[in-house]
Length: 226
Ligand SMILES: *Cc1c(COP(=O)(O)O)cnc(C)c1O
Image (cartoon, rainbow, N blue to C red):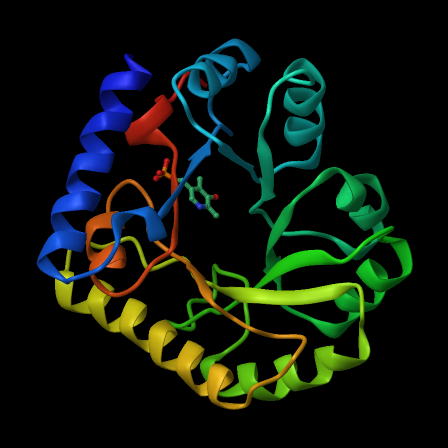
């Protein structure tokens, strides 16, 4: 696994898409998802110039953060977050990608020492296996978050269904983009909602075409060791 080569390949693809769509490639942030790799491999990713690391388990994030404590990294929690675990993680992350209920917002409000940049997770395809709000619930939910001053809604996040069907993927990502516009039109001061966290190894090209600003890539970037 040569992470530097992988990174360059991915960035090149992102650049091509952005050129085609008249977007600035610098507007797309690459988050390396390290849930399947060791501390050492994660360190190699940072040495290869990766600035954003994403983990879906609390223990994984805390362990890697400790291991890389002298390095300049932005930490993203991308997994399901149980309310009772918020206190263990909230003051160790830069971004939470999985805000999807008020009970979680309440706990973040109670435990966070500073304002936390949060993505509201949306289950666009309404799959039973996935977390997140249904599309029609999102604007009302974001409105309610104004009462929680420790939460800044920086954007929306989704995971697309696992499929090779491009039209399904494109539809999911463009729906999230439209929802972002709907929220931006409300001009909520607590929810600038400028970002879209969408796209993984198998679908990031389509996600970027449809407006992703954070792609979360594991397998194609750092590999899978366990
Ligand atoms: C694992 C994971 C990813 C990365 O998946 P790959 O297919 O390995 O790129 C992205 N987002 C979330 C929420 C994940 O759990």
